[in-house]
Structures are given as C-alpha cells and as structure tokens.
Image (cartoon, rainbow, N blue to C red):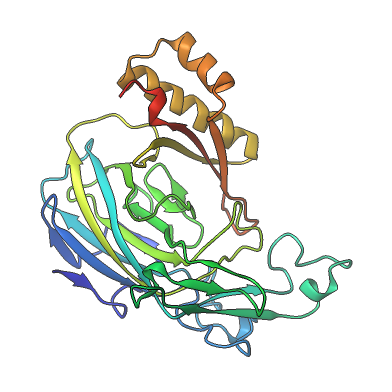
Length: 321
C-alpha cells in the first residue's frame, strides 16, 4: 500500500503548485501518517504554548497544523467531485490540549486568571482497547474522567482553484481546517475538484473533540489514516457534504454563526430537492418539523481568519431510501 510518511506530511498550505507525493487510482487505498497540530512540539506538560518557544511561530500565519499531500487522483478533472472514504484512523499513544494567554475566548480574561495568566498543557494518555490498539482504546482526561477515543480528521481538502491558503486558517468549499467530528471512519466526504488530479491533502487528527472546539485545540494527536478516493464526474456541489451510514450532512463555514447554520440548512434542502425528489415546500417544512433534524456547531474558534463551521444533518430514514 502506498504511504505518505510523517516526515513528508509537513506541508503548511493547500497549494496547487506542490508536486504530488502519491499518484493513486480511483478506489485504491493509501495511508498518510499525520503529525499533530503542533508538529511534535507538545510531548509533556512542561511543553508550554509560548509562541517564542514554538517552531514556526516566528512567521505569520504560523507554520502549524501540518498536512500530508498532495495526492494525485488519476482521472480527476475540474468540475468533478471527489468522494473521500475514511477507512481507518489509528491514533498515537497520547494527545494534548493547550491553554494560556491569548488562546481561545478566555485567553485575555481577568476573571479566568488561570487561563490568561499562565500557559498550561494537558497531556492525555491513550490506553489500548480489547483489540490491543487505540482503535477501540480510551482517552484518560484525568484520574477520574475517561472516554472512548473517537478520532477524526480535522483538516482535509483539495487544492483551491486560484489561491494558496494555509492549513491553519484556510477554509472554503474545497475543504480546509474545519474540525468536523464526522470526518471519521466509515463516513464519505464529498468535495468539488478544481485541478487535474484533485490534489488531495489531509492532516490534523484529533483523538476526540466536543462541539465548537472552544479552547482552540482539542485532543491533538499523531495518527495513521487509511483513505480511499473515488470520482463523480462533472457533478455540481455547492459545498462539502458528508454521508454517514445512516444520515446525510451539509457543511458550511461562515461568520456570524447564524449565517453558517442558515446556509448549511439551505444546502441540505437543495440536496433533498435535486437528489431525493423532494418538493421545495416539503424540504423547507421538513427541516422545521422533523424531530431528528440536527444542527452541529463543529468549530467556533477565535483563531486567525477561521469562520464558524456548521452542519445540517438528516437521517436517511426520511429520504425514502
């Protein structure tokens, strides 16, 4: 199986000028060994998020949040849609989260002086599960609290059409740093293609995360991700879509948050009308009345140019499938 190693997976931009590291055919599985968002800097509680000590923080935006790629998908052309299946994520033996001055919404707060007055790094050990691996393992938050590891890919996308955007604050209909918990094993992600070969990138795996990623970092970790890419030729797509085994999700990123929520919902309605035969009236009323319709706020971080990321989800049982 073809693989991008961790040493190779240290790009810091989605750049259509990059030379592909792999060439794959549709349906071919490959692996990317990802580094964590701090490029290996955080190894113990003594490694503080002090910008002057962190590699890459002498630049703006910082060279942080590394990604692996690009991967060239044979046959992909502008106007196609690439379908990304996350087949497997095997995370490292620990993850980390960092707080401190000017980090997150409370990094300048006088009331929350432990957050704004000093830097703190939390290291979370990962305990293997019955399989002997972290695939079914446990994250140990502290002596009293633990939960199952629920990994996902935080930064994923293809090369944008005309611009070059950083992996730390780049976002768009092509993907980017979106931190969507549903970019997870077993799910399929749909993205539009802008360049021959699609030029696919991936990185920034999280061992777990709650809604919003409030601090600005979640349980950041290294991982090995197995992926498969396929093609839908010449298909219109307004923004990223996700298909779970039992649900569909429309994604959008924007500020303010209500704009992201509204557009994600309207794009979901469009999906219902164009692909599942709903009338406009039925699609409109369904998202207001269905008790299982859900809005997810995946990422709401005050970092650089990041917009807020929302998802509108509907179970497949309502699609007449």
